[in-house]
Structure formats: structure tokens, C-alpha cells
Amino acid sequence: MTVSVIPLALMGNLTLQRISDAVREWVASGDGEKDELEEKWDEEVEEAENDVGGLTMSFLLSQALRFHISGNLANSEGEEEGDLKYQHTVSQCIHLYTWGFICMFLFVMILMKLQGQADTMKDEAEEETRRIESRLLGENTDAELALLHREGNNAESKQAQAEFVERLLEMLVVAFSMGMAWSMFFATKWYIAQTGTGQGDDALLALVVAVCISGVCFLS
Image (cartoon, rainbow, N blue to C red; front, side, top):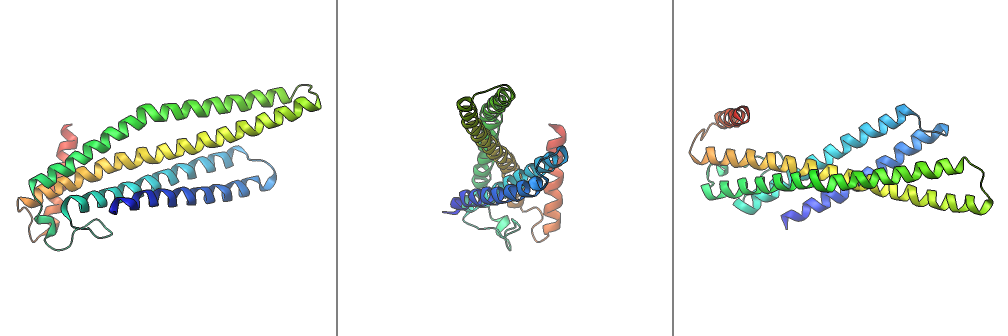
């Protein structure tokens, strides 16, 4: 049941993103057109929203996985109360490491496969929109204009759908890459804590974990 919070977070983020996007479009179209600076503003805000959504889901995923594996629910900062962090077994550490590698696999699959398909879909929609706009500049009968406008609406709908899919995949890339990082971090913390290192001194435990993870990252 704890995993159900992740799709709820995804739906909440997507809803807030649509509201935010509508507000930006309303502000940008106030003077009748969307200039280059407004396009850049929209792009940067969307990127930040994708990062926030992905980070939210990754942290909730790590919380749910840790609760599923150990039966202990960490607080809102990801910390386990009292001596619970020192009571994990090696098998629980391996279990959490395994989920970290699963997140890494999903991250690579989305990045290499699905995102490439989404980019192709978006490029095709943009190309179709440019083609219709160029045809509208020529001489057309009323029937041809009506047909072109219908095709233009369909192209805009496809472009909006492609942008939605692209943003969703970007959020999932962040979610799984950060999910991998959270899992590796907490699994390492569990493993070091179960040896008794830093027991009674959380600052020492945090220092040892930081040095170990930094060393592995440096050597790799």
C-alpha cells in the first residue's frame, strides 16, 4: 500500500504542471504573441518542474522500499528514529542494493529507448505544423483553408501530446536515477550501521557513510 503514494504524487505533480503551464501561457499571450524570452522562461520553468516532480517521486520510492524491506517507516527527512538504523541485517542491505540496480536499469531503458521515441514523435509533430503553416501562406480556396485549419488543429494536438509524453519521461528519468542514488545511499548506511560503527553517535555514522560513498565515486 505504501507504493500507492508514488502514482498519487505523479498525478498531483502533473495536475500542478498543467495549471502552471496554463498560467504561463495566459501571461505570455497577454500582448498577443509569445516572444523568445517568454519561450525561454516557459522552457526553464518546465525543466525545474520536471526535476521537482522526479525528486519527489524518487524520495517517496526510497521511503516505500525501505518500509517494505525493514518494516520501519522513516520520518519526513528520511531518518529512522532511535537505534532502528543500527538493527538492519545484511540481507536487508542486499535487498535495497538490488532495488537500486533495478532503478538504474529502468533509468537506462527510459533514457535510451522511450525518450528517443518521444523525441521522434515531437519532431514529426513540429515538422507537420511547419508544413501546414507554409501551405497557409499560399493561395487556397475556402475548402482548402478549412481543411488546413483542421489539419493544423490535429498537428497542434499531436505536438501537445508529444510534449506531455516528453515531460513525463523526463520526470521518470529523474525519478529512477535519483531512486537509484537514494537506494545506494541508504543501503550503504544500513550496512555500515549494522556493523556498530557510530552507534550512539549519528554524526560519526554520517561522516563514515560520506567518506565511503565519496571514495567509491572517486575510484569509479
